[in-house]
Image (cartoon, rainbow over all chains, first blue to last red; front, side, top):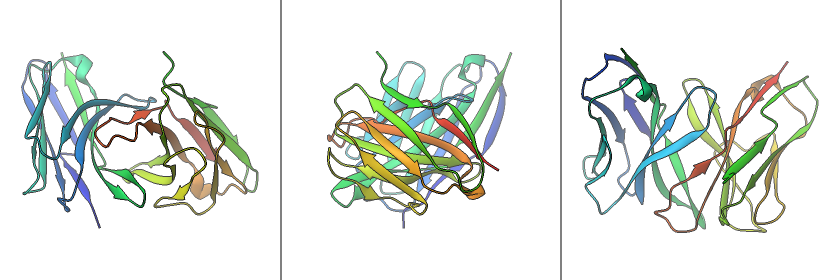
Length: 114
Length: 113
């Protein structure tokens, strides 16, 4: 059974720091891995999607890496800002019947203080 | 550009009452999903619909039914609500392409007393 774990569960950092969020998964038979952001009371917004054949993806100050063989992904946030405060979730996409599904981690709650 | 729209945003039910959560997407996506989010448990898949006219059970389907009314709309029904169904419910959609990202609605916060 696929399990997805995120460490740490919560993180509080001062503005300007570079930080790394971790995601690990137990089954490497995945199509891709997505990182999402969730603001309080809101839905999930897709940040980055890394295909199983890729090693990393970048968008602005965000960089996500994928090591499928070891079952790990990291989300690197450069020069953090208070506006980055949110919960970050990773999810792996794998086959399910005639379609596919995302299996989510429980998230890392990030607070960036001025 | 609405994306995925869920209604209602909030709902309080008494045990045994029924209700339907509505979801509509305007992105011409084939696949649609219903998730519930509970503290410490992440998002869990309730039901999904790979295409118009098909629905299948996910991880936690007990106590729920769904209808894929057309390509745009995918509703979730609670026939007899229980306190264990207190949760935040999210609808999501995506293209059939495996490397298309999921798009989520803003959720429905349901409390069953």
